[in-house]
Length: 327
Ligand code: PMV
Image 1 (cartoon, rainbow, N blue to C red):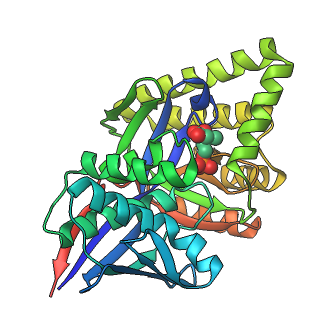
Image 2 (tube, protein in one colour):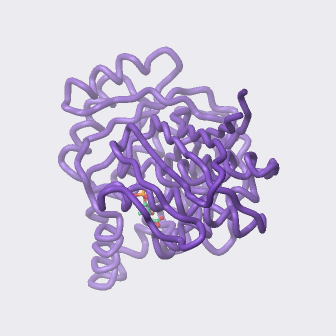
């Protein structure tokens, strides 16, 4: 028997960076998924492999250590191992396993690939141990697993990947589901430029420290953009969602976290008919998103490709983590 789970990528639609200062953000699950298959072993070893990452490594649940695999593989796969370990701890039982990761989510691009892999690993491994966990429980375990790897994550990645759909997220208040009536397609454009979230967050912090009276109002305005966007999503008013995305991109540009390549893709998408476009996640490279009326995403994707980006058409995913088993 093999046990599987799959969970979606995240996309911050509004409010990145401002969310660090306790402003609300709007986050959406997109239909790019990370799938994990787990089968039991008769020892305490956890063998993890991912073809997409070109990595394979073995860890021992009894020592918590890697027992085989090159260093790069061990580093890449350790977060998935942590997810197994944390699940075993939460359920008070464990067993060795073969874990195979197959992810459509580009890594390190601001789309929450590591959280989605953790969420799927937890749900599949728990199922192998005979437990079908509710999404909130999976999310909590994923948060604990990510904390060890990433320090202090805001919790937004594991939440959206577990529960799916749209949420409004505020650090001090947690999340609230947004019932969106909006009918749209989203094109994600990857610049393939690597960036460090930590450095970009530090860059905004330093700008804010130098010019608090200038930067604080921008951060606060971004919070208002999220509030207006939540309203527009509930009402299905995609024109307003698009206009607010443009304003949000401008504000992020002002905070110094855009990049020439991101701006190029944003302009190309707008020119090809996108209702709005902005960078998503930390910026400085990584991905942008373009909001499209149904049926227009292909043209926008083409324009993004012609402007040097790697486009993916991504529909909103109402479905969070799902698990199943196969003989
Ligand atoms: O790089 P990403 O997609 O994980 O986005 C980071 C989003 C920030 O708001 C910049 C940081 C954060 O912790 O919320």
